[in-house]
Length: 428
Image 1: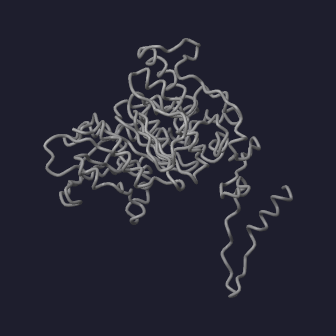
Image 2: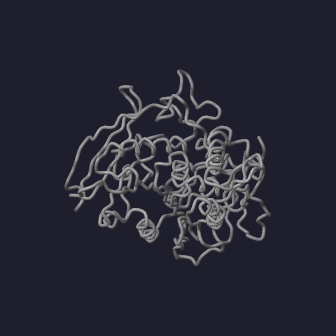
Image 3: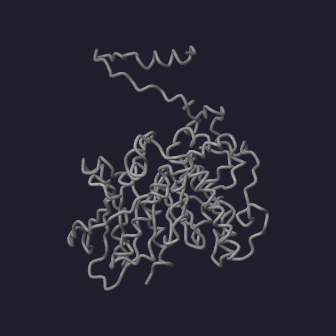
């Protein structure tokens, strides 16, 4: 063991005695990937396989060239909507095989049942608690979905599906275990729309080396502990769960299943972008601070990188994602192409001024680079090439953007801006 490693171990095992004489519990070992912080407070991380250290200096971002979303892999130009259909298929296949992992053929069906209905759960709304059993086993994992629709609505209503942190084995253990409602719930209902909430861990646990539970666990053979090479990581599993919820919406007469928007934040912001790419029934996307391998450009060496994602969150991706460590510029895809897979459907993306780890500028530039696809399909792109003023919404086109003051969060103002953005598409 290296001397530095021995020193770290000794520091970890030591017991600190405070002035009062009470010993403190041993501290967790330090994260060897964290080297410190910049003067602005941004975390510096080390990618152990490549030795790359986080960059937060715009002057040190190397030149990069993005793959053209309107040029086929064999070099043929994409000039028509029919051409784009073929281009979209090959981009989608690349993401399935080399980034997020494909859904295996033996992925189970979900059996949905309305467990209860409460007309008084919230003023002006009816709550239906819906439970989806994943597969046919007696102890099948359960997806718990709460659906709120305006009381007395005479026709099916648009719905915003929130894919939240929470759910899973901890559900029911207390308020923190239950997925949260949107902070603008009253405004959604006042517009005549509904909303639904699901906890992502109901679909699949979000931890390393825990593939034997959730939907992934239902697809593994006896003795198998992880997906086959090329098969799904947790992001693809969560996206699969979103599609199964849309299946349910198609059976719910109170829901307009052709007008369902999906919302997710951070890793779930990645998830909703990928879900929309795979499932064109999704009408709109609200992706907050999705960052690296989600809404920000991977080729832009700023903040979190491909190396960091592959090292620290490998279970979220297919196993073949590891091939791109240290080879970002060789990836055949980048974030602008993931966004473009939703075209011409509306996509709204956010970033934060102190969340530079997620590279908000790279998120905005990804929308800029996706815009030509929207324009080809008769829609409107982002409508700008330079970052707009902070705390202002850019939503003149079918790609929307908001850059808030603050960190890795989704603000109430961004929620309100998204609702205004969606008035164009959901208004009766």
